[in-house]
Length: 162
Image (cartoon, rainbow, N blue to C red; front, side):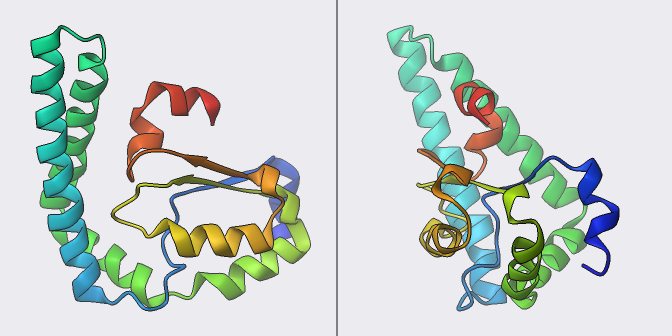
């Protein structure tokens, strides 16, 4: 924040993928519960169902859902390995007001920022982030994909587009 000119010459863009912190009404405990139960549990159930359905049909998409299952496992294992870090990150998300700092950086280096959002995100409410980003950066700097929170990193089609 203090000296962005020292690094902007070396950075061609800053990509914010499903960034948290744009919903000021979210609180610590609800976000913890949303992460652990609504997001993780529902993604596990949905992905398991899709894997079973694809295998029965012999669909080529099975590999995609198995890849998603692996990513969910990795995400969940990292949470269990260091739960203190996870809960500190959630505390940072709900307590840090990102918008003033981002406004400052956008004013000086707005062309560097891009937002990549998954419209079906159950972990980070995309509506508030999308609304804020539409008022702050050109429409060409906003990519909205179908899918949930991790899909930008899992879905090969989205990875290629980013």
